[in-house]
Image (cartoon, helix red, strand yellow):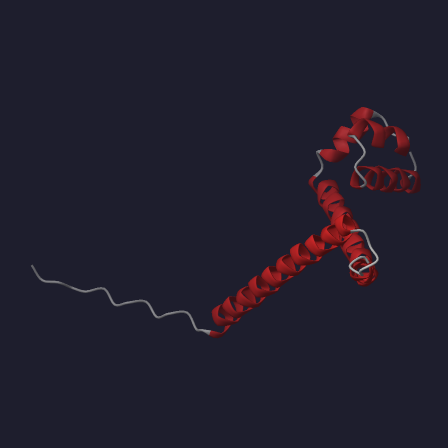
Length: 136
């Protein structure tokens, strides 16, 4: 298989795996044999590339969710208006409270972690204690 074709097959295989396909399904969609698929998965460089592709997907998804969150909050606020059925209002209120608690908790933990990291990086390593030479 020419280098370009293998590269294309590897990219198709990586993409399918990263999106949740089984090894067999990803191999079929990439046009490679099952044995080739498992050989690729045994290659540390390939597995590392797969992790990178998955991490990139997660980052893009997080970005899209962050962008959509403002509209979602507006929707929840809109659902709390008096003309909305009480059960819907209750659901919106619960969602807002749960999310705000989680956000506060994450923010506080992030701040605390940042402070600990700053303390670790700014404090010089403690000098080793001199060994005592106790005379019996």
